[in-house]
Structures are given as C-alpha cells and as structure tokens.
Amino acid sequence: MSSRLLEQAQFHGAKRLVHPRHRNFWLLTHILIFCCSTAVVWETVTRYLSNPTYMVQMTAIKNWVTFPTVVVCPEISYPEEKIQEFLGKIKYPPSVNATYIEGIILQLGAIYSRDVTFELEDLENIQKLLEYNDMDVETAGMMLTSTCKEILIKCRWHGKNIPCLSLFRMEMTSYGFCCVFNGRSLKREMKNPGYNKKRPVQKLHVSQVGPNRGLIVAISQNDTRPPVNTDLYYKWISLKNNGYYYVEMLSNGTPVPIGSEVWAGYSTKGIHIDDEVKDLSHSLRRCRMTDESLKYFPEYHRTYCLMECEMARIMERCNCTQVQHPVLPGVRQCGARDVRCVRSSVVPFGAGVCDCPMTCDRDIQISMPFAFKIYPDTPVIDSFYEGLDLTRISIVRVYLQNFNKMIFSRRSYFTRFNLVAQLGGVFNMFFGCSMLTVLEILMLLWHATDTLRNHALR
Image 1 (cartoon, rainbow, N blue to C red):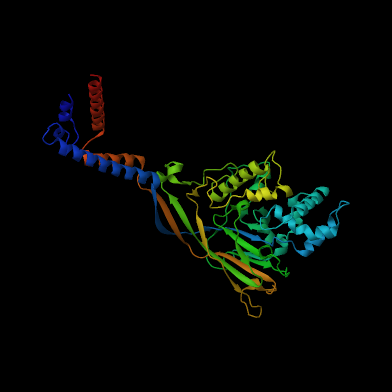
Image 2 (image 1 turned 90 degrees about the vertical axis):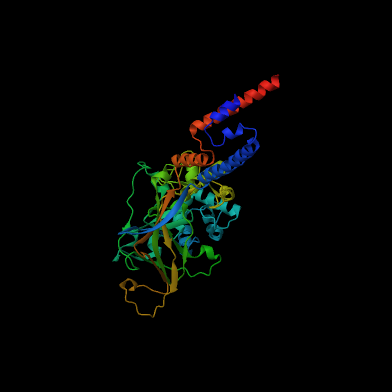
C-alpha cells in the first residue's frame, strides 16, 4: 500500500523511494532537501516577524511648515524680590517666623522640579505654612516665579512687533513654570468643563524662511546673583517639533546666557506610512500611529505614553499625582512627604520600563541652536534692538531655515499574502509541491504510522 502511494505521489523523487536499488540515495537526498527548505522557510518567516518594514528617504519642497512649540523657562530658583513680596503677603502660624521661611522657601520647588534639593522637615514646614494660608503649591509657585510679563521684554512674530503676553502663556511643565508659545497644557484642558479629547486644534505655520521671519524674543536677565547651583540659576528655551505640543512632558533645552543671542533655525523631516504598513499588527509594526489616542492624551506620542506610564507608577506606588500632572478625580496631589517616593518612581526615557514604542508618522524637527555674544557698542540695523539694554538681556530667534523637507517613507517588505506566496515558492523549488501535496504527505505519514502500529501489535 505504501509503495503504491509513493508511486502516485506528486512531489519530486517520491517514486524513486519505492525501488530498493536507489532508495538510500534518494532518502538521503530528500532529508537534505527537507533540511534546506526548512532553513529557508525559517529565515523567511523570521525576517517577516523581526523586520517586516524598511525606510526610503525622499525630499520634498513645502510651501509652509508647522511652527514648533517654543518654551521659555525662567530660573527654577526664585528671585529675591519675589521672595520678599511673598513673605510680606502670607500669615505665619505661632511656631514659624519669616526669617526661617526665607531661609528655606527655595525648597518649595522640589515638589514640582527634580533638580531642587530639599530637607524633608523644611519642606513639610513649608507645606504646613501654605495650608495655614489656604494656599496650594501651584499658587505659591506662581507667586514666587518670574512671570512672562517680567521675563519677556519684547517679541516679534512674522516680522511684526507684538505684545509678548498675546503670544505666550505661563504653564506648569515637568520642569516647573514656563512661558509657552504655540503649545498646550493637558492639565489646563482637562480642567475645562467642556473638555473634548477629540477636538481638533489649529497649529501655527510659517511660509517664509530666515531669522527675521519667525519668532524673536528679548529675555530679561536681571538676576545677577552668584549661582549656588548652576542648574537652578539660568533661563533656557526648548523647541518641540510638532507644533502645539503638550508641555507636561517637556524635555530640557538650551541655556540662554546673559548678554547673548541664540539662533535656533530648524528644518523638518516627515515620515510617510504606506497602507500595507498600517495594516500590520502593533507587534510587527513596532510603532504606533498618532491617531491612536491614549487614556488622557488625544493623540499618540512616545513622550505622552511615557508620561501616562509615569502617572500610573506614581499613583500605584505613592497614591497621589504630581502637581504638574492633570488633576484626576479621587486622587490627591502629591505633597512634601511624597517627594522621595515620586522621584524614585520617575520613568527613565530609554530604560524600557513602559511599553511605549516610537511614533510611526510624526514630523520631526531638526534644530541645532547656537549662541554668540552681544556687544553693546556694535551698531545694529534691526530696529528690534532699539531701547534694549544689551548688557542685561538675551535674544532668541526661532525661524525656518529652508523649505526642503526630508521624507522617510516606511514601506513593507511583504504582506501576509506575499509571505504565503514566498513560502509556496520555497516548497515548489525544493519539492515541486502544492497545497494538495501537503495533504498527500500527511496521508503518507498517517499511513506509515498506522502500519508501524499494526506491526507492533503483532
């Protein structure tokens, strides 16, 4: 029976196995061919599972480009005049005096900034003082931090001088209070009773290149105290690439030295995703589309995903939420006693703690800011410098460098349909078989097994 089945089999060399004279040779040949085909199949399937897509670089000319979110942050340390003004407004409980609070008030920033050192007892006394005055940490921090009106002296947008307060708004970020242009705050939006996560937003765009056709800001640098901690005593700027960026997950930026000018020209590169790649599963694609909303954020970005992961870790470990994070119903705000727990729960960006793959289709801004010294005695042509004390300010220019946009197209090596076709080609090359042949081989194996079982029973 087995001999008749082999003589009628449709895969290559099956008939040769029937004849005893050549059986050993053809059996060895079939074993080798089977091993080779298995290796090719393994390589094909592994390639599909490990790296199913590839990138192609192209260049395009754009007529307009989305302007980035620009964040200007004052010193984390509070100005002396702000401290004195704050001390004069608050009430003191019997066990606390103004001299003691003046000596420890800088530690308040430790509740919302990881760069500030603190002593737990001092920080608890500051929080008790705020509670005595029915004041929360955010309100006190706003009173002690330089306002946008105080640090932004002059602004120009699209070649026109415009009041800075009409462009910038003070927002709480992951590094404390900062002045934000063309950005947004999830914390502020979630406080709005009519908050709609799906509501579209209007981003700012530019259609002209050059240092005079973007955003120019004159920043006050009046604090000349000798720095005790350099990280706390300088102003800095940060550019976020996609425009109208959520500033809760802000990354550190570029320091702005006193008496200097910082030029931040930028260009963009985009990522185009083919439909075949979009149809791949998350595990194969290894990135997520921006329209895949998160629990709180209306769009996907890896930094947003990391923030939600960090929020979940802090709520699980510390049973609270940070001051700079959105206020969640039924969750208390972290206080002095929670600072150490919070800092130990922070999510490192590249540590792999959270399941946050890269973003598939978000434009990326390329910028390399550079600074140079301003010499007050040098004649200037630009009227923007008129009336400015160049020894006590810094200038920041953010502008589009060119309209050339690099586009990286993510494409699929082959789809599932192509994978099946390739596997069919492999088996056809080695065995000359089809899907029906697979059934035939299974039938032969079943018959051989049944024959061996019958012999064993005898």
